[in-house]
Amino acid sequence: MNEYLLELKNKYGYSDQLLGFLSQLIPNLINYYGEEYRDIIISAISNCEIHFQSKDEDPKTFLNSYFCINKEWKIPSLGGAFYHNEIMIKDGQVVAKPIIYLRRIYQGIYKPFDFNDDKQVNTLIHEICHLIKGYCKLKTDGEKIIDRTGLMKDTYSYSLEKGIIEEKNEMVGIEEALNDVETEQIQEIMTGRKQEVLSYRTAGKCVMRLLEHKDIAKVIRISQFSGDDSWTQYLGEEQSKLLIENFDVLVNSM
Image (cartoon, rainbow, N blue to C red; front, side, top):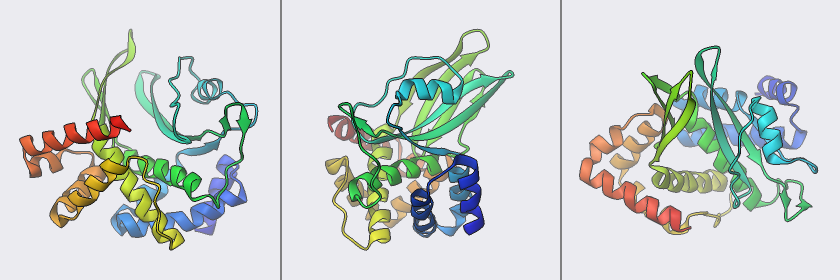
């Protein structure tokens, strides 16, 4: 682990605080999700920069520079962090580059990240959980691109002439609720303290009830990491559609 952390430090210039945090988090991620996902977790974190906004940094300017593009960004107005996987066409090939971006300027005031603040740490763990379930999920099918993050599914159309156009974003609600619960449980293991920082409280409580069914919890976890729809096939079309629609409503209402 020490050699791995040194590689991260050399690659991204991470602070000792962040490296110390990752040294605690990574073993707990592996323990929580399962030893079979160790390589995915290690590789995902190694191939995505965790970036803390600096004092004079405009997020849109930084992101355009980071991805070597020029586009209008819709930065989330709420929340302290976001995970983004930028899909691009490079040398005629579809490629993707991820980032975890932590906002530190609120109403013009810069606030350093506090690794002793459970709420701030929760936002970072939340985005890292998104990252590891979205790692290497990009697929192309003709003129379609499908990118998955856990159960979440983004579909794009693309061509060399028109570029990449997002078409639809599916299963956001249920994956956000699942990710929220996973984050809380991982943080409780790390800290030994009960956490009450669910971003989507009602949706999170509903997910907990769903995961009480061990067979459903198992097939959902497999689908989150495999990037397939086996969980919807297991539950059936009508039941899974009802879950997807209701979780979208619950999460959007928050």
